[in-house]
Amino acid sequence: MTAYVNNAIQRIADEGIGENLVWSCPNCLSDTFVVLDGIDTCYVCTYTETVTDCPHCDELFFEDKLESIDQYFDVDYCEGRSYFYNSYGYEKTSACPECAQRIAQDIQRQREYEAMQDEEYYHRLSEA
Image 1: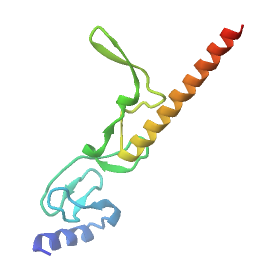
Image 2: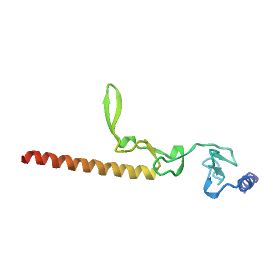
Image 3: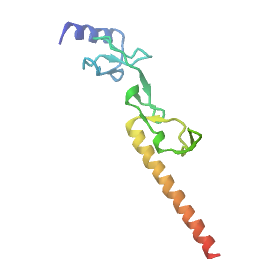
Image 4: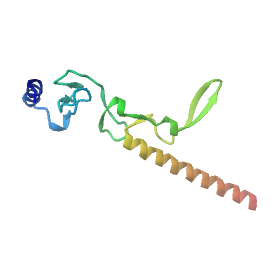
């Protein structure tokens, strides 16, 4: 370990920062990136990157790791603008990769259920 890493590790210990709040730095790869109270900085190389919580599971992630989920919503286009007309109960349009996958599956299930209901409705109309 270099002196910089040793100093950073000592600083982390001195400040009483828990292991769960120290991540691997995406810049220098040292386990000295602190995500405590908006610090969001590596104590070795001073690299900073925004850390935010996933709005669906509240776990912390680097902001650029969150994925857009708005491609799963139903959109209407009018006069060159797009409008969400069905977000399937999801108000936030970003999620961590795990939540994004779960949300995509949930929306697909909701669409299948709606299609089944529509099919049943039209089947009953044709019998009447």
